[in-house]
Length: 236
Length: 275
Image (cartoon, rainbow over all chains, first blue to last red):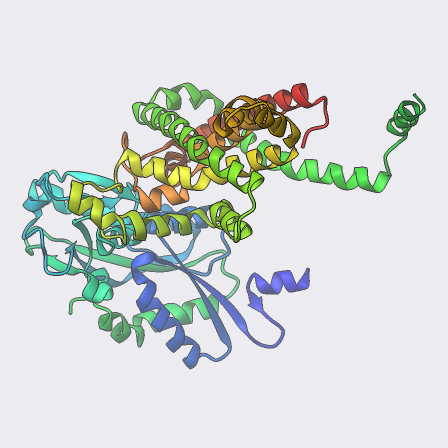
């Protein structure tokens, strides 16, 4: 029983603090790097990352998932759990939206308007997932009604289907395009049509390690910023 | 006569208390989750949710694709089961393991494997695209392929076990009387295992109905073409939990009715022995 409590968080007896961080899928690579840097700087803390669609993670938190920190890819899903937060959440980074296409852009997709073409397989994520909300907003801004063929579970599903060659295009984050390397390329969306994805982070009221959780958030807002930038987050 | 009496006496004896206690715990373990779910279901919403056009679309797609998958599983799976049961070829165990692996694999892994082999840029799927400008992903055919891939082993194992148990001497007798091999297969082998055939079809159908991971990974998710009721249920968990709970109850009721009916058929055919 004691071991169970320790495993769920708190002091392990040997001085190690367990910290559970739930983070949006698009943060996978960047937060992986931040985890390592944070653990190196704080030898007494062992961070466990869990990545998923922000809406999935928000549902998990509502259902009592043992988590200390939540980093969402949009404000909407953070707002869903706002009464479960300790204090307020704050935006720690931003992301740009791009159209992901196959390497070499064989379908010659140049603008949002090309997403209405019937010879182009366009996919997005299911409603509720941040990338879908952003996609809907961007398309509405541009007055474009895209011809979607699939609603994937999260942004990872969009990326997999495009890099795997099943789909031709989909709106994803710039960081996804960078992470895909040679397996995909991005088509920029003009500034007047684009919007900036805001990523909020917050400490959960149920956290049993508030000091470590606060330290992690401070780290993300401090030394973590250059790591985030190296993965394409922020204004860079 | 004496044997029968002894057996009757043994049946009347009390079973060991420890065994009964553990068995009861097992029953409780299976019953509690359903009670927990039924307790949460917004019963007043059932009509509203089932009246939604997207729910009806998903249900109808699930019915069509799961029946198609069960039929395909039978069309190819019965011959495969016969091959595994009645012939002895080198590597038979290897073949059986290969053909039933999708049963124990995480369905998402099966979906990824299908994607990289039959997807538009897959090892084989690229030729579908080049020759016929056709791809399985994002189509109802992709759903059927994914469901068949996951469901067929249930039919194969059920039917193979039945063919093994069926008395091969009837087949031999028919052969010595001049029946052809295919005649024996159709008129002797298949009728002898009819209950298992039915069970195999139903199990494969039920598995196809519940399939989720391989389908969304390989075929995608779009209302009317690839969004099955299982996918709709999973995705509704995040957007509208009340809808998800109602859909869960529909799935549970269907599965339970199927398994109840299946058991009765088995009991009727095998005098309670079963297998």
